[in-house]
Image (cartoon, rainbow, N blue to C red):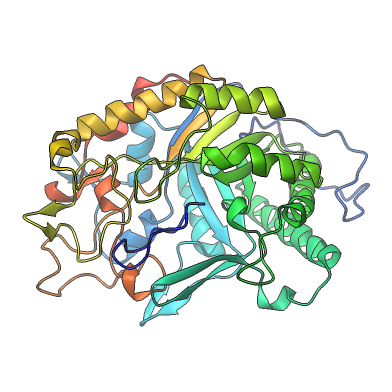
Length: 422
């Protein structure tokens, strides 16, 4: 999810696991480009609990000169994440890249970057939850229009768009596999309840989304079948309160062949997600009863610091996009510590697990600010996380596992992953 400058715009509030067998030789047998084939589909076992973080920005930030540290020494963030209990990381690969903005090449979601990051994850012993995003976001001033259809696909029938989606999903996974990497979990689209391959900025048709997702899901199944892999498929929904309605509509339109209901859950008032039942545990249980699929939280966060000192933004000049608990309540200031972050995330993971869920991945917790000295001197790194003026710097470092107030040293918040068993 994109996090915008909270002073400019309130954000719209409206993964799949793999147990892999030895790859079989490549085969095109039975492929009719509709996901129909006579090969056996190996469904994922989903027999462990997944724990991790996004790593969208880590390599990109390192390339602009930012440094991750542990115990005072420079460290590889993938190695640190693994050492502190993670077994999976999340990456996102977009069909339409951001390109250059104000002279900065923003490439963290490009094929080349994601391929390199998947190889880093593999070397560290981490699995990958991969979001494949065929649509793109349009940035304009202080606004973002999410999940728009590529210009080259506009004007095509929904059936043709489905064919193009199938080809892109299958082709991307196949290309990665030939480079020696593949995801354990594939989400086709990002937070699809806010739109998916929208032909116009205002359109959001759940039935159309379900029909198109069915084609994307079929492409993942075919890729898995062709290579004897049991990669799981995730249906990603923002806001647990929206899940029952949207999942029901998507399934009714044919988007049923997936394995996990993936949820974004940000309860703070900056985004305002809520639960349809009285706890995360009962929500996860209810979704499994209704749809027969386990849930996984793939986006959430807890702030380890307020992000300000004496009213001045810390880390960089960019406003923090999300703070939880609601940090402007002075009485809650004691809740902003690495230990509190660890405790909250551990309890959340245990609720997901107790409800029959299969994992928790935090969002943006690899973030670093673009400078340590504050924004007043104007000597920050040339860092944009998104192609917009408001994204010069980091909007998320107050939720990170690396403490920008302590020279970007890893702090104990990450150890919730050690506290929760697989």
